[in-house]
Amino acid sequence: MFLETILKFEVPIKIGVMLGGVMTAAAYFVLLERRMAAWIQDRVGPNRVGIPLTKIRLFGLGQPLADGLKFIMKEEFTPSHVDKQMFRLAPIVILTAALAVFAVIPFGSVIPSLVDGEPIELVVAPGIDVGLIYIFALSSIAVYGVILGGWASNNKYSFLGGLRSSAQLIAYELPLGLGILGVVAATGSLNLQQIIQHQANSGLWFAFAQPLGFVVFVTAAFAESARLPFDLPECEQELIGGYHTEYSGMKLLLFLIAEFLHLVTAAFLIVMLFLGGWHFWLITGSDNDIGWFTALIRVTVLCVKIFFVVAFFMLVRWSWPRFRFDQLMSLAWKVMLPLGIFNFMAVAFIDQIGRLFIVPLFSDEAFGEIAASWMMVVPSALVFVAALFVVAKMHPHVADNRPHRSFSPGIDSQL
Amino acid sequence: MQQDDPCIKWVEEPKLGTAGMMYLPMFIQGLTTTFRHMKKSLSGGAVTVSYPEEEPQIDNPLIYRGVHRLNKDDQGRVKCVACFLCATACPAHCIDIVGVESSWDDREKYPESFSIDELRCIYCGMCEEACPVDAIELTSLYNLTGRSREEMIFDKEKLLSVFDATHEAEPMKSKELGGTV
Image 1 (cartoon, rainbow over the protein chains, first blue to last red):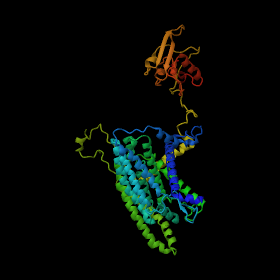
Image 2 (image 1 turned 90 degrees about the vertical axis):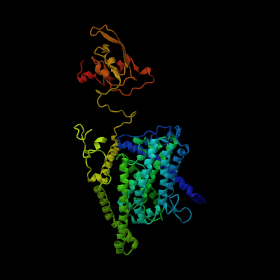
Image 3 (image 1 turned 120 degrees about the vertical axis):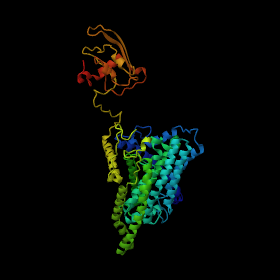
Image 4 (image 1 turned 180 degrees about the vertical axis):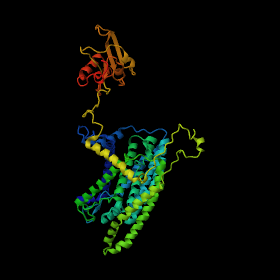
């Protein structure tokens, strides 16, 4: 009886778990980011705030609470020169879009059924076959939040940030789409659970099967979540924060949370599309008929993978300087876009070769397909290295228009 | 501006090699650098210290510029001869001296009162350099706090007590540095 009541509230419970988990994760990722920044810069980082009203420190794990409290207690100032309605709408749009994405993102595999035979899938909206399209549509809406914020602020720096953001996000949406195109072509599905299932069945993650697509996708994901080295919409040094310069208090908090949610979304997508989702060799199995223990292990594996991807994002932040805007654009249009198209062609080609020549060698067709995909790892890696090499030799991203000694004499009059 | 102007130095950027043009090898190189730093900090190699629990190491007290002290000579008298050179040299005008005629026969004057406004002081060390008898020195005491502005104006007694507190650990700089006295 009790279990049936629970089952009736299955979706609200899932939404609660997902939102609670993701928001808490975002808060703690902020702490992780600050501490990792400190470590990389040979500092200690925030380690004081522990349990409130006691002297227990807990390695600074109370910091997110204090940060949140600080934002709530701060004065929320709306400048008089802003477009008030748009100004209020922007953070709502961006946060709503960032949160709604998690409806189709699985946070585990399945858990055993509580009442009848059906195992419960760990995703808020199970069985959405256009999950990836849904994610892309909503993350495009998030760009509107950024542009809206920049425009409504009525401030040239914010506006520049919004403009940069729109140009950048449109430019990088193409390689992002082309990166997943290879995965979708290989799986034959846009459903994230089926994409994970496909990788679990073959035991071959797409990062190994399509390394070129992986690199293109990860690069574009960095740009989509506006992380360094692609954080031009909000570069502090040039734009004083970009589109959220004029925001303060809770509205700023909403922007910052949304930004971290984009990071978490990107990490989820990278893990699920290219790093096997909840799958890990030997310990998770691949079929859906599992007990509580395996279900728990799968959730843990997924969380650990996401943690490492997020940590990688943060490590990259302090490793590389920001791109100049023309470099960013030329990287998107002259490098990433051709590489994405090339990746898709290579995936289709390799897949067909495997289907035509390797699968018939085996009597069991399903096994033959798995064997074919494993055998195609080496040619895929070769394709990856070759593509990078060609890019290096053609150096399409060089656009140097600064004065040189060899310039024509006509430049004298300008100098 | 002529292109062949000898005052102009044309600098050519170094050309990127194949690894640089391929992005990823250089990217991994950068990652290893940051990773090395992270490993260093995580294994206790951070250069910052958790201050109240952990005292920072002052490498060389001889060149550290902390709280002032007024040195005493062998007979326990204040070394200062009230020549006003430190007050003149002070860019922050934080030194206030009242000199009177001394009863000792080795000097004409001595300070009746000598006060330094530690809040106004910029800890530049000019007073220490100006002093002809090495009477005023900067110690390596760095954690100077007080509850009021008045409290932070150090008078002669206070400055001499700083000498009493620190002269064991930090002998007079003049001796170490081969000074005048």
